[in-house]
Structures are given as C-alpha cells and as structure tokens.
Image: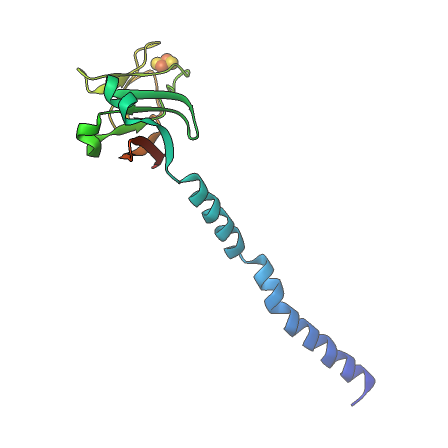
Length: 146
Ligand code: FES
C-alpha cells in the first residue's frame, strides 16, 4: 500500500467513525428530553390554601402562590367541579371576580366577562384567562397547570 492510499484509508475511517457522534450531538432528542423534564417540574400540584379557607367564601384568591395569582372557585362539597384560573384580566391586568349568579368571571375595570373555562364571553378582553386543574387533598387545595 502506498503512503497516499494509507492516508486516504485512515482519513475515511476517521470520518466514518465520527459521523454517528456528530449526528448524536445535533439530534433534537437531547433538547426534547430537557424540555419535557422542565415541563414535568412546572406541572406538579401546588398547595394554594386550606379547604377551610375555600369553604368559608366558596372561593379562594391567592395572589402569590407558586403558580402565580390563582382564584379557585367551589367548595369541598363539590370538589369534582372546582374551577381555578389566573384572575389577572387579559385586557389591562385588573383582578377579575367570580359572579356566582352569572356563573362567570367579571372584570371590575372594563366589564370583560369570562366563562368558567376562562374563555372570553364579552370584551374588551380578547384572550382567555389561564386555567388550572384543581383538587382537594388532606385538607388542602392544590392546583397545577392544565
Ligand atoms: S382590565 Fe379587565 S376589562 Fe379592562
């Protein structure tokens, strides 16, 4: 084997053995795994108050919970139908209030109305309220990102 042929063989072998490593480094799988791990971390149940606080008024407003501002509506007697939203109005940021008689959230600033699921029913707000899953466990109220 001539010297030039030998160098070509070694170069080709190096290239062939490096290709899988290079492909693995560029693979989006690494990124996906990292983001799904962080999604799982942000989707854990967070304690936002006690059942006693919720049952007292039929709603529980917490402005600084681990998930941010949250308004939970309901009581422990109907725990399966708890509603939980971020009460920050998507129009200009006022805090919406739950109106039992209207069965909706109403903003006191410009009268935007939101359904139980956070969807806009009446403007001027154009975007829905952020919603959370809610549950009661061991005397506490928990929410997590839906
Ligand atoms: S801030 Fe809520 S409707 Fe304007």
